[in-house]
Image (cartoon, rainbow, N blue to C red; front, side):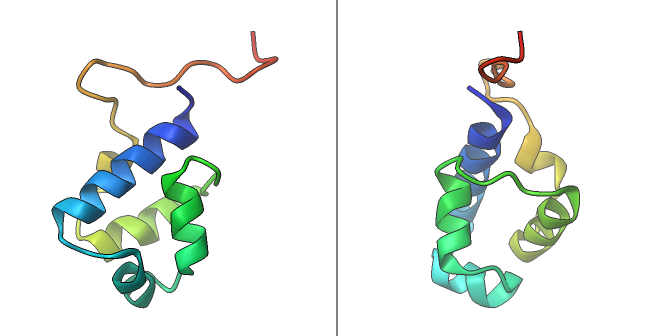
Length: 82
């Protein structure tokens, strides 16, 4: 798993834990629903500023967006990175 997928999974989990839809988060954050959907699918590569703004919209620490899974999976290297 790469970091984009990890961030996306954490973001989706935190959003659902807060009981928010992507549309509601769009209103809070200013990021389009299409962007948020791509983020949750691991297809976006958010900047540090974007992570901060999204964490603010969710009411969580930005560290929660990048924290490893319970099993310690922090992401495998990308193709060609080895």
